[in-house]
Amino acid sequence: MLTKLLCRKTCAQCRLCCVFDSYDFRETPVFDRRMRDRIASLLPDAAVVSAGTDSFRFRLTVTDDEGGCACPLLDPENGCMLGEDKPFVCRLFPFRVMHLNGRRVIAVSPLCDALTEKPLAVLLRFVRDELADPVFAYAAAHPDEVQPYDALCPVLLWEPQTFD
Image (cartoon, rainbow, N blue to C red; front, side):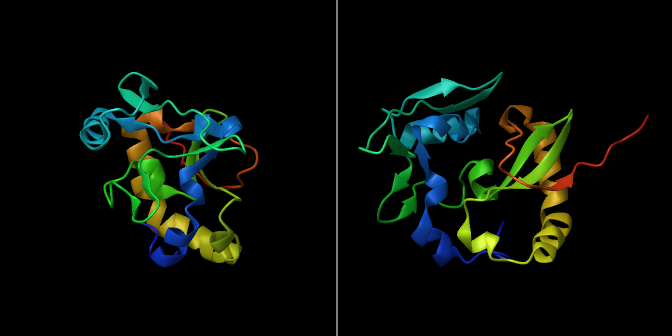
């Protein structure tokens, strides 16, 4: 989804989006039942918990000395075990769809160095032209996967308001 903006090689070398500190375990990807079943076939012992009506996430525990944990699907040699069929939030990162003041927004994580080097005009154009329609449509169909707003993530686009 983001290959027009980010190089796969850059993302593969970084993998920051696949590692969580103990204070941000709530940021782990939320996925639907189909994805949960696929994950269970790859990792039968993975701890998965409910994250909403029909959504799930990993129950992570600290696995390193710094209080962090890598996503159970991260293969250190090959990247995500799911390949291109990873959870929506993973395909979207470093962009994020969030709830803010009763509306959905597309924001950007400040953690992605490759993206923060891009001019703001490039990011705004990409979000407007490439992401907005599919992201807001997906978010409307999968509301459990929309996270509360994180003030560290600048908002790039608000979902258009519709009036009856």
